[in-house]
Length: 276
Image (tube, rainbow, N blue to C red):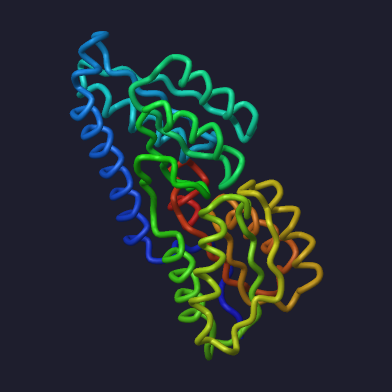
């Protein structure tokens, strides 16, 4: 017996709590750094914040809007935001621009764990407070990090699969985010840690789809043709899980599978709305 095919948010209240915590911590740290550097800000009238986003998408647009909204409460602060759209060289250039502009604080969501180490360290060595958010780097040249518990997210995915598969038994396909990024690596580790006690649940294939829905769709198409008797698909984001679900519905109409993803988006056709 197999389960109904649908895209599920694992422990939805937990995910929403993580998002709220990340947002609150971001505002708290920004405000604290502004207070610490108030004398510097007064020297030129405005406290300048530079934000370097690694990529776009509905979720990051929401982050940007939330930061801009918070900024409205700070009459002596201004923020300039640049998005690299997954181009590493552009993000390096964006951060160099903020260094040249001598911003009072640099907020960075780094593309991956390695490529931006040198340019971030450069900003940090020049005395610019550096706040990393969402993604980490393999270096300690930054002031603070704000992000969710991605290992915990992976464990929650594993726990949900275990509770939904009959007799805690089945075959699982994993569609990963970009493994050069810290959230993907940590969710990968958390999923395996969480499944250690479920000896009869096996991950039969694991592929990197780079956080992209279209690539996740292509990967799912190939894997579901190889493994038509699959019981569950687990994806590192709701975007990818939603695309995998569409492929499963098309290819395996006679079979019903469980599709699991992390719901973080509030955009139409993604996140919570994808469950309905």
